[in-house]
Image 1 (tube, rainbow, N blue to C red):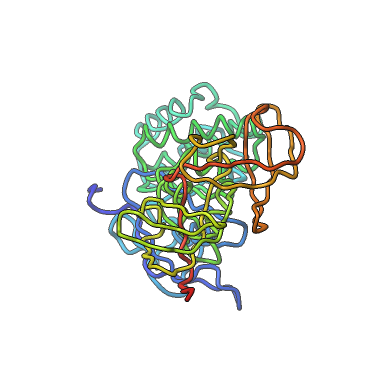
Image 2 (image 1 turned 120 degrees about the vertical axis):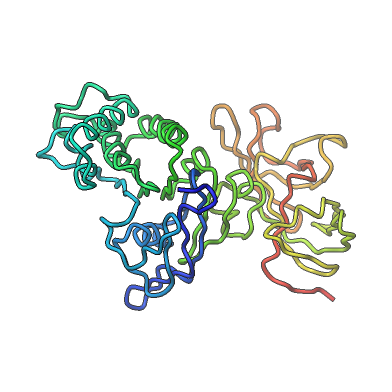
Length: 368
């Protein structure tokens, strides 16, 4: 497939179950060779979207293209995509080799081609010696690797992965996260991965599509989604976030002046997220990550100052979870090093770098 042709295109797809709208007019273009994750809470539509791409569900409206071909009306076994499930879905009565080669048989490959392909896939997943075993003789992690090899063996345009690591323990899950990304890079295949785990999405993905109520709230790199969330939902779902109300007091296109808790702040204009624009008088929400707040004792610790009062500390070994409150009553959460703040309640001087502030514009309300 030409690199100029997207691996997957979802065009204005909608899907409802009775009165529940699972996918709400979603459009998404997935370029060839990337690892994209559909991230969101349960019921947000991510698995419904993935199953629609796979062909297990038929959209009520819209179209789905795979490799430049309209597959909207095609059954799953005709589409040039394969799916990896959380429960592995391996054939229990078949050996590992037969499981891995099954899709190749259905594709009409010769016996020699299948044998060579199975050998290559078992090497890829680092299980070259388990071909004669049945799935019941494998560990959970090994079964998931075999399921991945079986899905890759017929050489699909894209691999669709529906929370494939959800049934594994934490240590094994972390190991397989690294392996999945390594396999994706080695094969150059397009991976579309579904998860509700933010750390999982951040650690593996080239792009993350954060979903809510059947819509994509933001599609961007993991770093951009975290540092420049487009909506309050994204800010709160992807990591912890402090949110402060502010009023725009000036904008010259390069610097944005803000009134925040009685303080005058100046931040770069490109701190505004989601491609929005702001004008003097607009009310906005500032997003500041807990690790971006520094507790100091005077000027020089950061460019933006914010006094607050500490009211709860939780010791977590290598860090302290600190809860504070501003003069206006806004709750703040900080992550600080042990020993960097005095124990107990008390007034603190907080400092934030200008570039660490994200400015959300979710409503246009002008204060006169």
